[in-house]
Length: 74
Image (cartoon, rainbow, N blue to C red; front, top):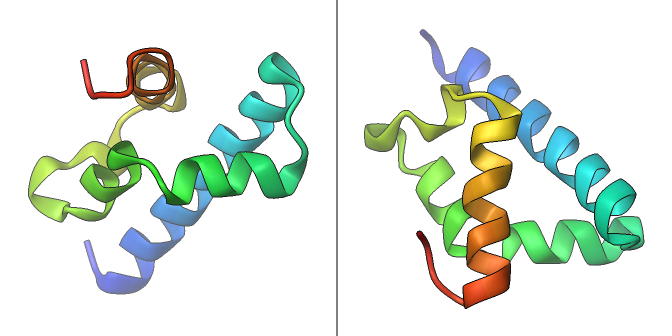
């Protein structure tokens, strides 16, 4: 997988996570993106060694949701 493909996958994942936060938590787009970009989950997504960027949106959202609810990764 090349850098462009990885970047695309990360951007798509962030988009899907933001849409889900907006739908399920009633956040604005800015609030949703701020939540994602300031999360430890996003840091893990960017760490290519975790391969989290290639996981399903539902799986990554469950990690993000745990972080939001508890203040830490599950």
